[in-house]
Length: 404
Image (cartoon, rainbow, N blue to C red; front, side, top):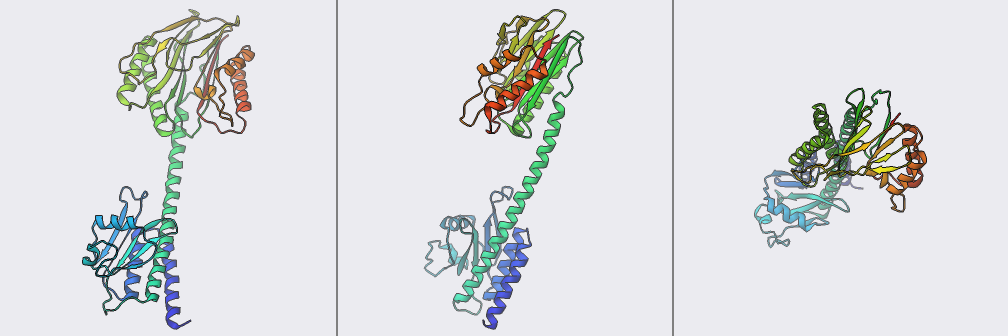
């Protein structure tokens, strides 16, 4: 190996160490530009890389040293997707005429085996003459080192973004868990329990149990379209609206009418909420409710009869002005009310078969005499047995209330 080759190899090794320790795209580009200019003895160069999607909307990072390239020319070069270095003759073999007028003499792709990041553009030698094959190979190697450095920087950014997202999700999960009731009202005439399992750290299912007086209890359940952050935010707004309206002691159908208007006016057309709310009054032995497009809850009578609570109207947010029909049933000692979201009935097994409401009803019939915690637990066991190893496909929420 000649002395020149040893020097070049040492230079490349040192460059690799420097670039791969940097997470600054601009520094990486600037370093290979200066190293190339020094090796080739040129005074003009330019470089650009496409940083999409990690550059906050600034997709192309550009550095110019005596060569200025317009955005249209950059787009043309990226569309060529060159695999190797190309010399730019006066005839301009690439067909991009303003490369020559800009002073570009040779271009080097900055790319991995499967992706083009950008290009390094080099002007003419100060001392004249063409670039030797050794010089072209040296700069091409520099570009390969830059590619690895850019990949490392992008992977680091992705890792940081993922970490930040995880932290935000954990915070959102903590906030959402605090919004949902943990402790059930302690009333002597009612046994009530709930179960909630989101598919992600934050979900779009909502449930609530609110004591209105010593003899009345309100329970509600909802399913916001979609999953993740948007659904969780809409769920939080729904909860605050419902709690404010129920505290005003308005009739239930009027509360749901107002909630529908709020959701319609403050969400996009593709967002909607299925919602059910009921007030159980032990003194009047009545259950008043409104169902806004939600899965029909089960009212299991001590006598063995089963009623599906379907009175109400459209789901929230579909139309601006909707009137909701109130429903009412008699309720007495031993009667059980079961609310659920479609994550229960539509739980999927590995064959994409649904658990179904028919299976759910069978489970409820077999367990209707048990405590509410046992009812919820046995439903979960049946779902788990049916689903097997298949991943949970939707948020699962259950609310169970029995008059005792």
